Image 1: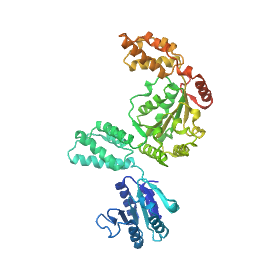
Image 2: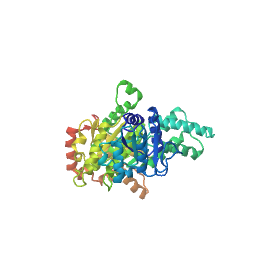
Image 3: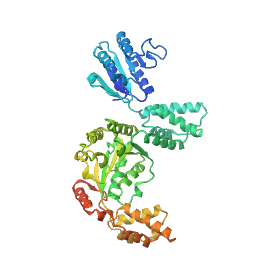
Image 4: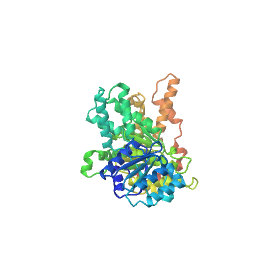
Length: 493
């Protein structure tokens, strides 16, 4: 829980003790005031600098000490909401903890004590008395109301605003995942940058958002210009993704379709798994966020789980979105016996989130060693489908050569693509690209033109991974024959 209705329900039921996780205090106090006002409940706010007060100017004398403030609140006896801001550390003091516990136990007059902290911990002594409440990020409706207020204020100050309704909606979407204060600062910073709010400010806000998020959570917001058509082969997977992408359209919900939830792509390394993940978001016109699994793990107890929770919470706030988890086995393959059970708890938290997450978050996970993943992660229903990416066939290799040459400002018609495809049997897409790059280096050094023969020479000098690790590739194909769908589709070979 974390919205105004949840809080109003707690106040209405006279819940004695709420421990609230709050990072946006201004918005939280607005929500508290709104919920309490509907129930005609007075709100008192305690801070260490002012003490306990009904308004900014009526702090009660002698209530700066939290214990004294709690005594004052208990003596009032009338129903009310008491917010103790940034008071999580008070629960570490045995005397204050006991005072809080007795306040909650003796609550016969319908008073609710709310203790806020950025990272609250509920002590076992009050676990049965307290409810943990978390302030969720602003909704699109809240953000749009803030954006409209800010834009109107800028207009009054003679700042030109040229965004149309569609542009405003894009601006609101780009602000998802931030607190209200952070979002407003970003809009005003965009205006201050060039003295106006226009379409190019949407790109600016997205770039700023990516930089800010990438420093705060193990989640990297990526700007990708690759589309699915730029990926060679994998026709079956690309067609599946194109069809599922239509389910994000507003008309799809009326039709009765639910948005797709996710896909796991496994296969031979270097065959386009990561490229598909990057291209998908561009094709669906959705933001792409990559979960940095290596950055999840921290040295302190509970830190890893907290990082995962923060990353997933940020992802939810940015929906609709594509969440990419590259080389998933690195995060979830271990047994957890050697790390105090951290990886098992991480896995458990992720599985619960996968099961309960809201619509609009498409998870695309890639894995080079799918057999190292725990069975519960591969259970039917976790992902909409599991695809296997094999080495490209002859036609796919010719297509990949054409794409890679065109990418480097070479006309594919000047090369014998059929000969190159035939010479690159058992090569992955990444190995084909590497051969072209190596041939370009050699051609430049020799002051000669890049041609078919120079690439053939590099192919001949390369031993592909499928031959050096033939047993591993064979085992992967055997597993995929009964557990996955071919990404190449019926026309792959």
